[in-house]
Amino acid sequence: MNKQLFEEHRDVPVISLRGLCFSYGGGSLILSDINLDVVAGEFVCFLGQSGCGKSTLLRLLAGLEVPTEGEILLDNQKINGASLERGVVFQDYGLFPWLTAGENIKLALEQKFPKLSKTQYRQRALEALKKVGLDESVYTKLPKALSGGMKQRCAIAQAFAIEPSILLMDEPFGALDAVTRARLQDMLLELWSGQLPKKTVLFVTHDVDEAILLANRIIVLGQSPSKIIYECSIPDGKKPTRDTQFEDIEFLRLRNELIRHINKDISSH
Image (cartoon, rainbow, N blue to C red; front, side, top):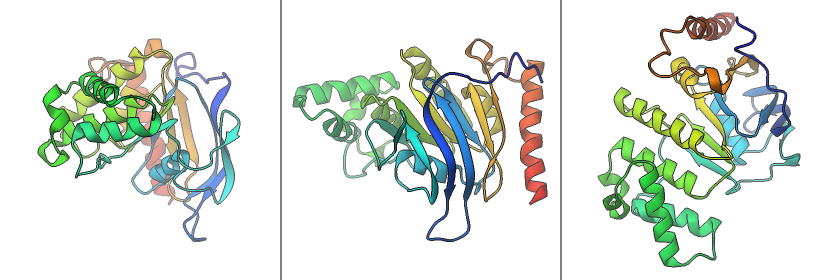
């Protein structure tokens, strides 16, 4: 593997996981001794087979679960519950079905920015929809009237609208068809790369190709009790595009290496 291409990050971390372990109700460990530092502005993909604890790890980062052992630090402070400083996008969209798309975004804005006027809430919600490629008419539509891709765009718009420094995404494109999925992947990369400072994104996927396309750092988790079994970094200037992803020999080698580690771990279990 080209060591210049897949290099380690050595900057000051914004998120630190120290000896992180987790189990539900004192049962078998799902996560075991996870140690990880994440630098501000990184796009990190957690990659692994279904059931390996990726989503559980994201829930811990969101403050929706409490570690059984160890700790999670955000700017050297322990995470203590959920926070609007961390936006979350789930696979099931996370939209309230009785509220319109615009009202869902407004609700999040009201929690984050309580002093804005009604006009400002509406304007910010409309701007958020526009950024994800949705027109003004979507504002008044209920989620049931939207396609899966449109609902996920709304969920992403909601997450970006509250201006979190950290964005947590749990297989957000997993339920979408291939074409819609590709469009939203490209949209997410544009949103992430187009903002300064860049948001720190932690993205869960079991798709190796998706991880290579999106991330500048990939963390592979093994089978439960899950540990980090492999990781690599891809500098921004050498990230593949959709056109070059399957042509560049270095990234084909990386793809094979990731698959090899996942398959080896599955075989050992």
